[in-house]
Every structure is written in structure tokens, then in C-alpha cells.
Length: 156
Image (cartoon, rainbow, N blue to C red):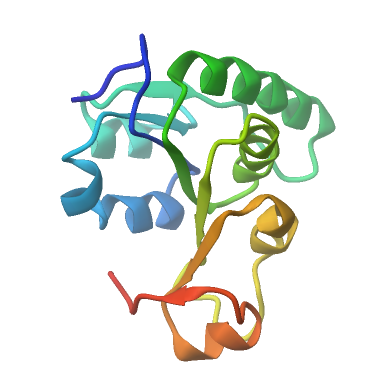
């Protein structure tokens, strides 16, 4: 059900490791939808996503202005081509340019705050906040930082 040649239901934006793990835990939801993943081309990602449709992002994303600009251009081309019904991410830095472009293109966005950040919001969560249509948290304590979020409980 993954494709990139016409409108897809969801674009999932993620870095490798834990952020990817969070989105993989939502497989019962995304597996029933057409989808495209945007993520780095790492061994971890290739192993875990198998034959899923992927668009390769530019890394590193932390404090790297040239890659921020490359990923901003990638967001424009990917989101215009895929025309997703929704964009979903758990971070990290790669999410920021995609949320900005999705907001500009009026594509709804969902930011899922990672479960291991309870005491304070993540930097990506703070940066994406103005461009987020719906925020999801996994712990009651996270509502202190995101009172407008939907509490869904942990899914890992």
C-alpha cells in the first residue's frame, strides 16, 4: 500500500533509532493506509522498514544549516508530490522543515511526543508547535507542557 506517485494517506517523518521505533509501534494504524516514509538511509532504517516506500533525508540535522535547507527543499518536493492527507512525526530535527512546509501547504500534522521525555518538551516539539495541527502525548505529566495535547498512553 506504499506509493509516492499520487496522493498518499500519510507521510511519516522520522530519524532512526527511538523515533523510528515509536512510529513502527503504530503499524496497526499506518499499515492500512497508503504511506511514504521520510528518513535517513541508515542500516537501522533499511532493516526495519524493509520494502516500505522511503524518501531519503539529509543528515545530520542537528545544528547543520546546509542540511536544514536541503531538507526544506526535500519537504517541498515530497509533500507536493505525495499530497498526503496527514503528516505524522515523533521527531527529531528532520520534522521541523516538514512541519513548516506542511503548514504552508495546509496539510494537517500530528506530532507525537516521545515517551521518554516527561520532564520537559523536546526541542523538536517546541519548534514544531506553531505548525502542529494535533499533538499527542503518552504520559499525564507531558500535559503540563502541552495542555492542548491528546493523551493516548504509551504504545511501546
